[in-house]
Every structure is written in structure tokens, then in C-alpha cells.
Length: 399
Image (tube, rainbow, N blue to C red):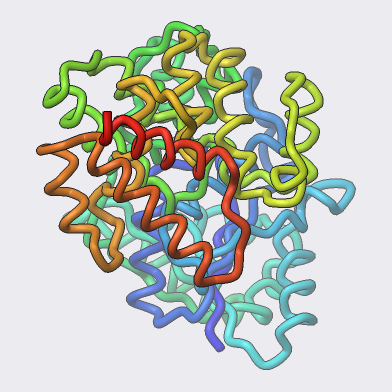
């Protein structure tokens, strides 16, 4: 087992960190890479306006999730839980005790090699892990770096590897903290991390969440879901806009509804129920037990309260899971867009996609029929709203 330990303040984590991490996984053949946000950095004071330790850890969670390497990359909050300064030697000892047979690699920027002798117990650090240092740019004069590497190997018995990432992203957290208050720097951040910064008002950002432009709305939305869900939300957005253009609905409303329709998808049942209580959402017996049915209603409530979405958008979000009798055009569009977006793969989806652009009500009715058949086959109860929606559409077809 080869484990990479990537520590830092991550204030904030950016694409440069992720590119370096991917390279380390590939070049060192890592089985796991562990990102470790520091709680209280021992060698430098965090600058004014920094995110809190918990916020830095939350952003690191989002950044690591965006790698889409769930079996390899993860975040440790060990240094946040440990009182006092966050010394690397303590972290490595804890990881070594949990993984006695693993080969550990301590990942760092190459500039840290010059400060390494001043770390707490550097010889002990070198005995616990091999050191892998990222060189910052191709073509730079590496002779001083190689001299320092050789010195540390002689003086501390360190095993040091110099890594040369294929993709160099010229950005630092310090520079980003200067760019963000001016509305710049988003291109250097994982989208969800940028959304979290806007949502929490970090680093001098002052976004009005109720008046966001679409790129910022996407970012904040993505900060509230898992990275693996983003492709679905993107696909739903594209499909909803295409359907709105085909059937004469407002494309901006369709886009907004699609972007926000899954923002509470990953909340637990307890968290969903708390939101329902907060916003006075009345639930039936089936909804109180089925967490999958709740996210549409709680997402609609947050879309209004947090993002200032208008009522037609909120109603489309509210009914995108079960449907209902008497659906509006926008409600129909979001329901079917969610059903047929490009990442959906099930028997009959191609037929459903064609029908959505030829006969919207026909596609909706087919979708309800397919849902009822699937739920029945699994022995799962079908929500009464879905049955009412199906019967309503059948009635329309025969009038």
C-alpha cells in the first residue's frame, strides 16, 4: 500500500493542488492520497480574512470530490481535531500507527525543501515517510534544488523524489485571495469550491445569492451536491433549455430550475425533515419515509428562500420527482428533462427522447407509465401524485 500525504492550509484549495495530486498518484503509483488541511500552521500565521479551519476543510472536501477518485483520494481532519500547532511529525506518526505496513510519501512544494531542516523533528519526519517534492515549472534552474536534495539526503537520511507535473497551473492561494474580492480567479478553482466561497462570503466576496448570474448560480449549486451528480445537473440544464425552445417556454426559467433542482439531493433524511419543518412543508406518510421523495420539495423551498427563484421555477422543482395532475409547461419540461438527459441509460430512453420533441404530453405519459411499471416490479409503492398525473394525462388524451 502506497499512501501520499498532501498537507497544507488550502486557503483556498485550487486547481494547482489537484493537478499536482493527480500527477503524484500516477508517477508514484499511489493507492491512496490523503489531503490534510492544517488546523494551526506552526510556521506562519494565517493572513487576515482567511477562511476558518472548518471552512478550509469543507472546501478541501469539495476539491477532492471533484477529482472523482473516491477509492483513492480523501480528506483527513486530524489536524483540525488535534489541539495546538499542526506539526507534520505528529500527523505522520498517527498515519503510520494506522497503516504500519504502508509506504508513506509526504507531498510538498519544492520550495519547502529549503525550510525542511527547521521543521519540528525533521529527521523523524524523514524516517516516517519518503519525501516527494513538486517542481514548480519546467525549465527552471534546478541546480540549487538538487543541491538541497542531496544535502537533506546526507544530513537527515531522507529519501527525496522530485516530481515534474505535466500540467503546471500558475496560481497560488495567496494570489487567489487577492483576486477573489474583485470577482476574479474563478477559473483557477474547482467550480464547487468557487460556489462555496460565494455561498459563504469568503475572501471578501459579496455575492447576492438572489441575484446571481447563471455561471455563479451553477457554481453555488454544484457546491451543494456531490461531484458525481454534476454531469446529471448539466445534462438536465441543456435538455431543459432545448425543450423550452422547442415548446415555447421561458428558457431562463427552465435553466434556473434545472440548475437548482437537485441542491438538496444529498441531505440525510433527518436533514430533509428539519428543512420541511423549517419551511412548513406538509408531508404524507410515504414522503416521511422515503428520502428520495423529499429533495424536490426541500430544493424548491431553498430555491425560493436562498436564491430568490420565482414561483413557476419553484413549482417546477417541487414536482420534478413525482409529477402531479395539472402540470404547467415548465413543470412538464423539467420533469422530462430530468428523465431523459444524456447520462440516463435505461431501456426505452431513446424512444422517450425522440417523443419529447414530437409530443411532450405523450412523452410525459410514457415516462409516468415507465415509472409506475418500474416501481411496481421492484415492489415499491408509487406516490399517489404520480398516479394522479398519469390519469390526468390519459384524460387529456381522450378528450
